[in-house]
Image (cartoon, rainbow, N blue to C red):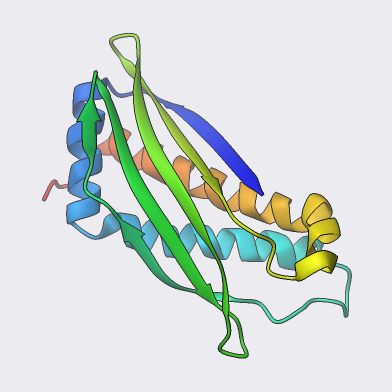
Length: 161
């Protein structure tokens, strides 16, 4: 399934690019990914019919590529890998995080990617109803965390690495 979410961050593109590079190098983005993933699982647990919840996967690793800068836009490739309770791998999320200038004082932060439903044919139907909502909640949580952290870093409210 295709996934795309975006946020308008109140930070200029230069500060956002520097801040995102710091977040990747400092390991913050991995921790934020785990927290966002848990937010998506919590959404799924809340929305799933009682008694029918399958084994919930846990996020095993989040991988990030170094930022690529081109024509004023920055892109970071990412991959989230999850493992189910049975130890079997769940399909991964492969996505790009893109920073795009929006005027002098704002940056659009976009996460665009793809994942496959972990439940086969049954999951394809459930995905439209619940799993896609959980994936969207996960992406929304990550972008909200990133935007807030980039804004605080620009304002000097958090330390830079």
